[in-house]
Image (spheres, rainbow, N blue to C red):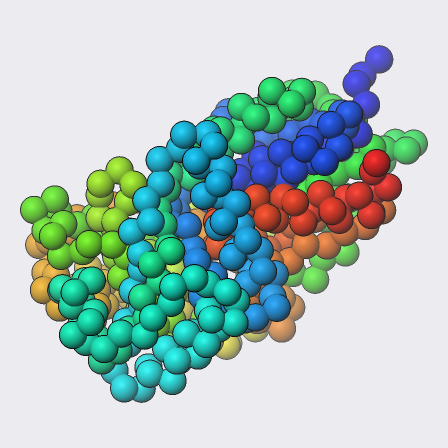
Length: 403
């Protein structure tokens, strides 16, 4: 007879792993399985990001992102210290490069203060130069608690903790069908079926697909946005001491191209945010016709295009033009030159888009009697992952009647 698990988690990224850890800690007798479609965990958004432990400055007070990012950052630092994972608090500056950006910079400072972000300071140009000598600004915010880490190392440590707690982690399980069967469901993949009483959907780029397979009403669709990076040549690493970010566009839930010193000693520049033609479209030439047709057939996609066509066109132009990309970087650090950067990697952000074309700005987690669906968890979900996991465990206790 097939094993009947109490809970199956779909998705082996950092949010799925953190949710598994929270469940095993809160319900140690729970029979838990985690299903990952790739051959290893943490392959997509977890393994393709800037590696920043965000402080929580950007997010509307009271939102999921505000509450879970501030708490999640604290929990993540504790986790890294317990498991011997290297991290560094190198700090971040957010620079206003024109007077027009000053009101938005002030709003960010007030948000961060309301969210309880520690140590925030407003900087005049002279003060900024003591922290980031090559950055340009009329005013800036310094967030000294912002840190860097390799999230794949965090995911690997979560994997080990989950297995030690008795959970099963099964890779190569691409869910293609869900069958309701008695008091549970059968999750069907090319490698067989997995039976579970309850499901937690942390499928990231495919979270809406899994939700629809389960018959859940979803008011959003995942639209993939590729973020492309350039690498700063080693001989020019002296231009960046820590993290240098612009004041973000309030109409677009992306942070803008920025400079990031990584935990492995590199300096990245980016990412942009350009529409991808596949959910795992890490390059311009990566196209999945079925996925592209699904996006084009969604009315929310066309409403989004109508809202953001100007921004989207500029992002595509900047993707195709190194000169345009470098000009955006020069607003932050004027000394950077085209020859100082070389093409780097890319990531894909799973962005939920509503039917009216709006880009869902907060985390979106929907619970029901037999399933919980994480429908929007882009950045800063890696930072917030442990707090998200504990939040989902609390939801599961109520929705699933766990004890």
